[in-house]
Amino acid sequence: MLSRSISFLIIISFGCFSAYAQQQKRKANIAVIQASRMPRQDPFGSDFNIEMVRPQMMDNLNNQLDLFDKAGQAGADLVCGPEDMQNIGAYGLHINVNDLHTEKILFNSLAVPVPGPLTDRIGAIAKKHGMYIIAPIYEAYGDKVFNTAVIFDRTGKIIGKHRKTIMPVMETWLVSTGDELNVYETDFGSIGIAICWEISYPEVPAIYALKGADIIFNPTMARDNKPGQSLSTAPMFITRARDYSVYIVPVVLGSDGNGILDFNGDVVAENVGGVNTVIMAEVDFSKERTYQSAWWEPINGTNNTRAMMMKSRRPDLFQLLSDPNPPVLEKYKDIRLTTGDRERQLEAVKKVDYGPGRKE
Image (tube, rainbow, N blue to C red; front, side, top):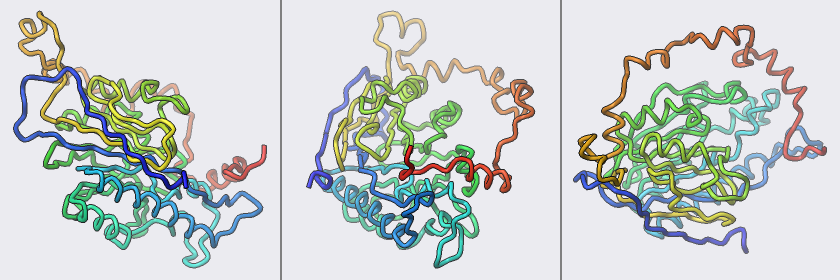
């Protein structure tokens, strides 16, 4: 069946590379899965069946874990999945719907412990193929829920958890924020993870770049490209890649919006229209972005764009970036977000009343 077919796209990436190789960096096959969105229930719909929520969540997960396995078979050194591999994020709007078995809010009841049975399954796939895996899931931690990307090494061991630090207002109703922006070292290069909205804040990839990240993964629910078109139409991703001279890797459910952009902002791997596909490119992490000009190196002392930009920074001018009350907020002093205000959240739910089954 077409929906279960697997195709592979392997592209060797080229570009203007630095002559200064870093010995600890090397080539690696970087993969993302382009998975189809499976059905889910609509609590706003008249045909809502709460007993189908978990089976449909597992269908979504099983489809994506199968793609992880296919990525390993294709020789991936690292594979990343999309934000919310469970496909349950939309239930976060339904704060007045409880699970029949746990009596918790439905969304909260679907979050899973880390480590736990789900991460054990993912770790087994990482170990089987000797590859790194980034698996974004909703994590249950005590009485809190986090939007978490779990990082597995080649032995299947969990080596880190990136908990989403900045999120849309609706997500803050039930999800707690993380507080760390860590870079994780692999045996081929350094990786950062910006989940969905995080990459909309340029400070996040800037911090990763300052910490030495070579590549930033963006598991997300939101495309930056024009619908059905190439990542070459994704201005934010191109800008982030060029501004910080890093690879940017968006991963989203659907048949477009997934792939790899190099540090020049050029698309080196994608498969627009591909269904349940593994997209993979060989990336040489020993190479850096350079500017090919006869005068660049004599004037700057280097033709390494990232080195020149980083050494020309003026941190003394950037202090306003960390000010919790910058002047612009005076303009918005009367605006109150619904974060932390359950009464207003319930009112909003009643007014919004939307979902996949809504009839216009």
